[in-house]
Image 1 (cartoon, helix red, strand yellow):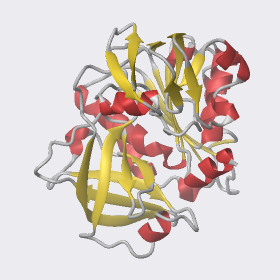
Image 2: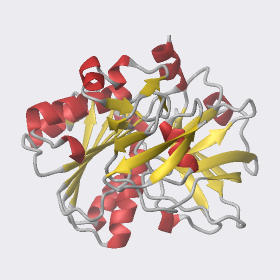
Image 3: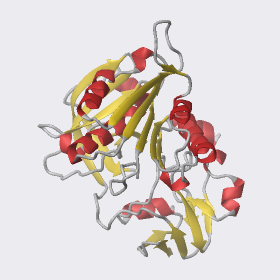
Length: 345
């Protein structure tokens, strides 16, 4: 048995198999619904059910509140249709744009950017035309079938020769994948990838000022977006707020400062939560630094990436206290396997 999903306002349609989520069916059909974690942890895939019925698989309470569910909002990544449905989902990508591919990659280089951050460059196969938008991510498919997601840190025009994607991987001690990256992974090793995934990318048709908000390795997709802005000659005012614990965690500060020097409309504000005695810059929570500097966000777009608590706090406070329109907040919440296990329990 299958059910037909109709998206509004785009009027695009696709079929969902029995016990399949709306999001998985959309991905299979090449339709770019918004999403982040794909397992009910972050809320990025939230959309509105206009007609029909769905049941939800397990999800985190923070991803969809009781009031939101009562108002007809659903999480497409865990929503399983029980009938034909009409779903309101704005910003759906054009048909056939950047199909999701499974492909092998070769580890081209490993460079430790900080004690717990590794830059992994993965060479793309010459036989496949892997395309993506700056800000999107890929999944590593591990031997047991489990997956780990990482954002491309370089823009599509900046893959180099041979073509390779750049990934920033933070070591999570005890992590099934990151322990391997920081101990046994070698150059020329073959890995299995799938992507591109995610709806986190710059809305280039807008002319609104941009706030880029990152914590830790949440810099990675923001770096790709900055590279894209530079290549496209996008001159919208933009400011990058990068929050880290200590100054040593600002693992690409030289790159950021160089980008700022080359782009007159880009500013950079590093914020440390655990500064050393010699730190003269901003301190505290990074999203609160944004609120102090830009108390009125009503005319802005915000692109936030990093720890779930930062993304959730920014979304809540920017909308409630700074007047940011809800549809002007774009996010990629870096939900770890440990986070997902905690949410499930």
